[in-house]
Amino acid sequence: MLRLRNLLMHRADPPGPGRRRLRTALVAVAALVAAGTAAVLFVQPASSHGTSIAQPSRHYSCWERWGSDFQNPAMATQDPMCWAAWQNDTNAMWNWNGLYREQVGGNHQAAVPDNQLCSGGRTGGTRYAALDTPGAWKTTQVNSSFTFTNWDQANHGADYYRIYVTKQGYNAQTDALDWADLELLKDTGDINPGVGRTPPSGGGTLVDIPITAPNRTGHHVVYMIWQASHQDQSFYSCSDVWFGSGQPQEPTGEPTEQPTEEPTDDPTEEPTTGTPAGYACTATATVNSWGSGATVSVKVANTGSQAIHNWMLHWTWPGSGVTVSNIWSAEHSTMGGMEMAGPAAWNQAIAVGGQIEFGFNVNGSLSTAPAFDCLPT
Image 1 (cartoon, rainbow, N blue to C red):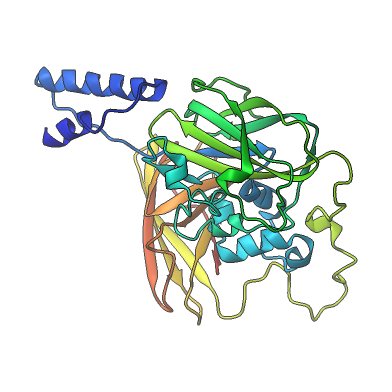
Image 2: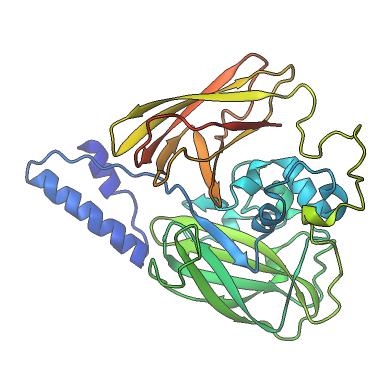
């Protein structure tokens, strides 16, 4: 009862649709308690959140181009900014939908200092830190009027989207982003959950926001603040755009455009997607099924001769209709039909011969564990 009272008295938020929805739920729980009914309130984090996909955020753009081939060394020359971001922390791109801060209270400039805007003030430690580095990020060509699209994967809705564009004269190649570099061009106000377009796959909603940014040429950064309405979560993103003509003709980074750089007939070359020598891991799981769902307990073991600093699991379900409902001691994301799990902040490293454990619940019929592909770094 004390915990419930503390939750009900948590803080006096400014009025907004998200707070109204949460307050309605809490009042209903309080009514049950008052009536003598035992009430248990579970507040689960969403298994997916979102980011800008048009124009794409830096982390989504890197995942989109290289997610299926992220260990290809050709990325270092064809897409050096993405390469540096992947090397800094692989999970930054796998968790492209998780760049957010909690309990900012609307004071974004205090929570996110200059030179750290693209990483959301280094949210998650150094995970997204490479996104703050200025340089030759891939750009999307736009006109002075364009549409900015955010993918709200979990239908959080928004208290507001604030869309900024850098001022003319800003040098995205050399200058880490500061608040003073930005001009606020759009504040949408409230957008209810589910308002927008239905994406072709992946669930959630696509929210289109028209932007007009006159008198700009060359490489600029579009900066988004998405204040989700389900609770005090603030999402941030940097998207690189090119106004006008003369966009650099750079390789797209697609692996299919590399055959002339790395001969395919050299049998002595190591596969470009191979794991460095000494790094190896395996994952095994047990399944406790109850018919309409199951609990999966996973062990990730270091089976190599080098300590693992980070790891990622990929898998597909043995059948259809299975979805992850919640996960603990790990972070879950998806890529098309592929499921992925990465470490939490405290279990990234695995010593030689050691192992870590995490688990998740699923909705749907699952009686046997999937086959995991374990990727160590």
